[in-house]
Image 1: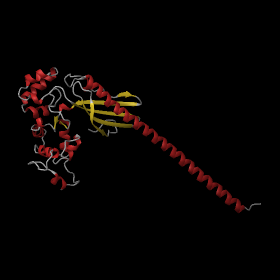
Image 2: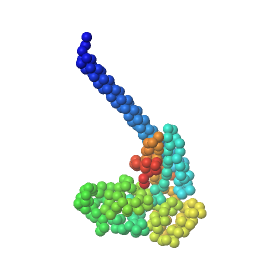
Image 3: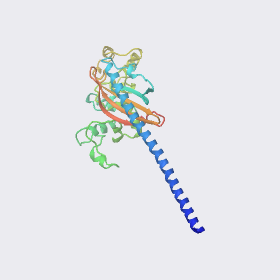
Image 4: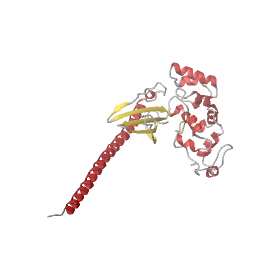
Length: 296
């Protein structure tokens, strides 16, 4: 016969083993739940990425179908279609012609940059810094900065001496703080457009290009009645007609997609001259806000 003490030890061992097995079972169940959650999130993320890419592809088709029709604020691609259900989730797509903005890399528009800065209430001298950031030499302009100045600043960044690759890169340039970037970004583009569209450009951009408030107001008034054709532009603006175009070459596409609680956003630049199949020339992800809209 076993003694009472031995029976107690055996009972304690059994209880301990049961506790360990219970803990292992609970841990395994928790791990399984976490793994399932991660797997669902990974699948949703892949689906959202695919939907965002699909949104850009749809935009390319829409742009190709416009042909040589003038770009206007009333164009089919310019309308807000809202959130559209697609596949396992939804997608929102927005398209803007880059010719509505002032191209920073266009020699034909270089003298318009300081005027735009002044119109926006910013230091016109920033134009020198923007030019120094992209030019091939290391000689600073009067109000600019080159490699030596940047190496003396926190972060020790240096100018790439190459065209801007994204609007966000402007924030690295001397004199362009967060306020200046937020003010400037809606009115400029890094796409290689060489003219501005009077049908879609802002008053500020038109004033920077034309330099005549009266002419700008006539353009804004005329385009409110109907889209401007090339002949209309020539009649309204004789001297600066070469800086204006009614059909752009590049378009900015922003696609936001969601599956369950996952959001994915992408901003693409498409080269889409009239009669040419659109091609993606730039691709940048963006992080959407929790509400489902992106932070521009």
